[in-house]
Amino acid sequence: MRFASLGSGSKGNATLVQAGDTLVMVDCGFSLRETTRRMARLGVEPGQLDAVLVTHEHSDHCAGVARLSRNHGVPVYLSHGTAASGRCDGSHELRRFNSGACFEVGELAVQAVSVPHDAAEPCQYRLGWGGRSLGLLTDLGCITPHVLDHYSECHSLLLEFNHDSQMLQAGAYPPALKRRVGGDWGHLNNGQAAQFLSQIDAASLRHLVVAHISENNNSRELAEQALATVLQSMKSVVWAAQADGFDWLSV
Ligand SMILES: [Zn+2]
Ligand SMILES: [Zn+2]
Image (cartoon, rainbow, N blue to C red):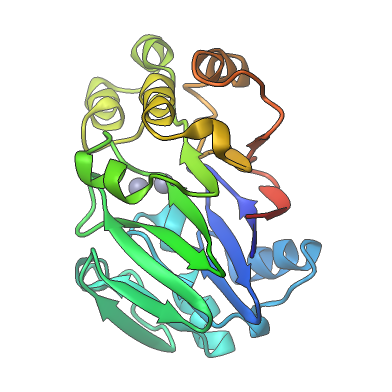
């Protein structure tokens, strides 16, 4: 089982997960042309996809879903609430579930986990194959006991380090947007992400991917400072970039 990213951040997200013969994409916030180009860089093409799993209806996650699905006949899995937003209408096929559902896509075991975020019915995913498990966790304003329960003992984890609280407060965003991003239904700040890592067994992760990093309200240096409080070494840490994501990693 392996995973890679086409790009991560508020301008577009898409994560690829391959397990045995199954290839899925989680979210698609890029145009079809850009998606195809970025997939080629990772040695795969849209026609190989078995499914697109959507986390929520914000455009950085679903802007490219319907077109990708329609052009390549790929089914789209999404919560009832996300489907009701209409943002994935026009897809080849929508397969709706209740957030919290467990289901299978090909060889991959999928657990959808509800998260607090300002969308209709947002969920994140824990994916399992062959005794290994991968946690994908971005776009949430706080860590709930429910999230802690579902993301313990992952073998690899992709985790949001969206912003530094002080940078956000001192920055140029209007007050309402600062409250939104920094609130319990917004995005994780560096401190929250680091605290979450201290609550799970972060040292045993094969790969930790730092993801959905704000280009305006965060820096690698500040995220590293937060990580240093919970990790002895940065050797298993991978940084997900907006421009080119990251290359395949083995879960
Ligand atoms: Zn997002
Ligand atoms: Zn979002």
